[in-house]
Amino acid sequence: MRKVVMGLSGGMDSATLLGLLLEQGFAIHCCSFVYGSKHGIYELEAAENIVAFYQERKKPVTHRVIDLRIPFLYMQSSLLKSGGPIPEGHYEAESMKQTVVPGRNLIFASVMAGIAESIGADTIYLGVHSGDHAIYPDCRPTFIMSLNETISFSSDGKVRVVAPLLKDDKGSILYKGYHGCTPKIPYHLTRTCYKDQPIACGKCGSCQERLEAFAKNGLKDPIPYED
Amino acid sequence: MRKVVMGLSGGMDSATLLGLLLEQGFAIHCCSFVYGSKHGIYELEAAENIVAFYQERKKPVTHRVIDLRIPFLYMQSSLLKSGGPIPEGHYEAESMKQTVVPGRNLIFASVMAGIAESIGADTIYLGVHSGDHAIYPDCRPTFIMSLNETISFSSDGKVRVVAPLLKDDKGSILYKGYHGCTPKIPYHLTRTCYKDQPIACGKCGSCQERLEAFAKNGLKDPIPYED
Image 1: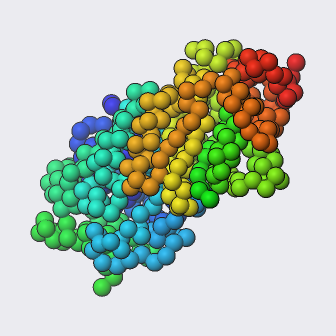
Image 2 (image 1 turned 30 degrees about the vertical axis):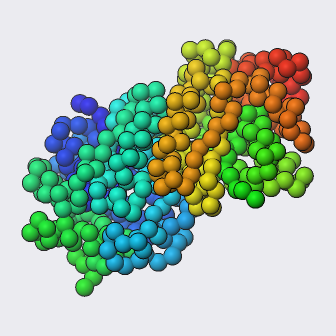
Image 3 (image 1 turned 135 degrees about the vertical axis):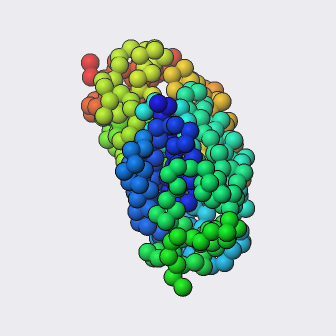
């Protein structure tokens, strides 16, 4: 069974990626990162619950939680516990740029590249998508293409990067995940909100983008919201 | 004063890079990484002594030691404490490939890119050189060029990567450092040996390459060796 590595944040995009990769028959080694984000403990709990969901159903999923809080102590971002408050409003608004974490996806992918090479996996899958392009430079197609090349050189051709949802928005990701996977992807276990609170706020850019995706698909979001 | 970030391993190449960058009038933020290598404690001590040497002479050098032992727990390499013995013999021998650490320079550069962006530095300097090309894919020109592009995309154009010693071998690095810097680079404080012992072994590929560099320049290596 072909082994691949993927980043599992605990959000709905990476949960969908996991479901779609399982449909393709891969053995999947999921990596989640603890990096000092305000919502980190809730994301991590979500990632663990999603993995448990699939493991209970005998799916070939393993999980590693990697603590990167030390290097991220030095990064400036309102997404981190060390930074200012999370802005409210639309996901693509200028104010959301405060939530960029310098180097984040590059660091995560670099660690996953080293792990992939060490365990004999040839591909890293990332769940980045088009909704992230406006604000986050490390989610854009130019970055992903260049990252793939860099990781290929770094590993002497042994590891590549694939981001199959790169051109999808959250609405079409939900469509693919909702209609394309057995068992159904456990969206009730996922975490999207950026705020440091157990119940999703429904107001931050991240919550708004999620709520829009469910509305577009004529579905009700199964998680509870604050209001 | 222009601020730049560089990787300082404690070896003679990065010590030379630091000396050459100081000649250019930069304020230099050095990053050293603890990652579970067998010789890590000796490298780190060397890096700290090199920084202290310049700080005592009022040079604009700051230093950050970043603990990455957790992510490197998952990497396979004989250079790490978790791996097999360090091979003896020539630096470019096939056996030296056991000392490749998957993802190492990519992870180090990614963390430095995030730090550079966070502190407002526009360049990361790396001390990689041509002696590393045969064995280490993450030291080759193709990798460095690609890494520069990836970090530029990741940071939205704010950070670039420069490796000014990329085409030099250890002999020409020593020549540049020995003749081009005031004060003279403190080679007596540097650490090159890969082995887990305080005194350099003189036999591992890394020691041999260093000894050849001093011999080529008609100089005596100021550090003690085992035999």
